[in-house]
Image 1 (tube, helix red, strand yellow):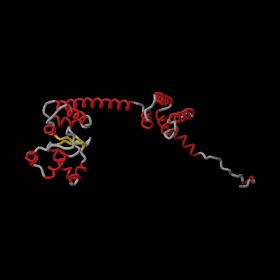
Image 2 (image 1 turned 120 degrees about the vertical axis):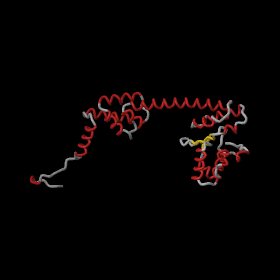
Image 3 (image 1 turned 90 degrees about the horizontal axis):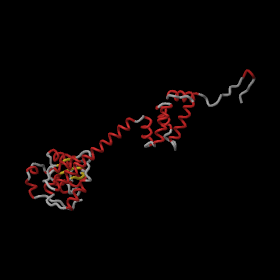
Image 4 (image 1 turned 180 degrees about the horizontal axis):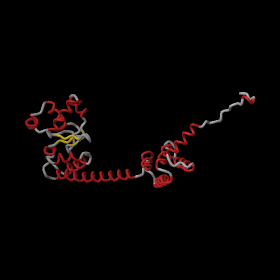
Length: 257
């Protein structure tokens, strides 16, 4: 959190500032001097908090920030909620040295939207500070590319796995090698739809895999090979009475009771 920020005296004579409305000037001053500003000129922007501190309506502040972005003065990241100030580096890196460089590296490591660093770096004079932005941007882009490849590989791996294994992992977490092999064997012995149905019926059990095995073993012994077989058996069981009603033979002289 910054203790103070510089605002140059020629701020008020800048052509872009002179063309701004009073509300836009106040919002621009806010992004330059509020307590959330950082050494690198990138930080999370809370519009509602900004509106409260400036005593303005939130929709009006949103409109002003949108105008500042359209003029290329700031850039907002809708995905991460971060904001970057275009010419921050030109006016705030008037001195360097290891303490400043260490601070820049630390704060860059917290940035989520890589494009914001590149947005500011393009307007920093060549030198060590500019090199820190460029190096970090390249490193993060490579890292993001690697992460995207890993996510794609994992997604392809998941999509290529049998539906029974996907159901297990979505319901119970990653399957151990023994459970994975067991489920595949049951899919081969019966059918994948029966394995999934057994897993559905095992979701509330303390040991779901063991419970599912008992169900599958029972169905295999009864010769059930499809969901239709299971449903038919269930319907017959529901239709059968739990006991034989006692119907007295009145003609034979039997009495009720």
